[in-house]
Length: 205
Image (cartoon, rainbow, N blue to C red; front, side, top):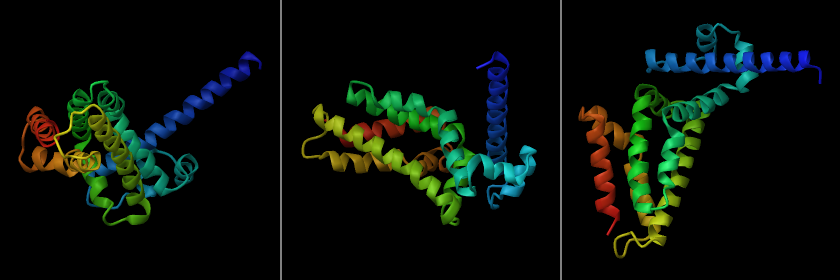
């Protein structure tokens, strides 16, 4: 392939990624500034300075936009680091790091995530699907961690991996974080300490 063509392809790819980033940032801004209002494609397109058709070309649908936004929020909030923490060879340390990383991830974009989770109750078609997929990933991660805790003999006597996964599901949910962070106005390190300590005391011998 001629160098000029390669260069043109790189420019097009860069422009496409910049457009995608602008649209996601616009959706993020819209949720943050007007959390109680529906997020329409027209408003997002206007904020991103693109056409409505461009939004659909990039994400396929309004639901696709929310799917991408949900994953983008987690990734920018430290999703990779949180997963790395959960997968620590020592399952008990993975428990500590995973719960702590989860708290940091939620805190990074708390207002937008609060709006997204709240909207899922009202807009099943576009938003609830995105939230369900995010939560499905969390469930899989907690099931895996619970299984490793059981395999390494860390769980309290009589506690099964399935029961441990239920506890982890409760303690790593956004609402558990937000009840402490927003509801009790606790500092982030205190929120993390409470949830990590609760998880260890509930699950570990």
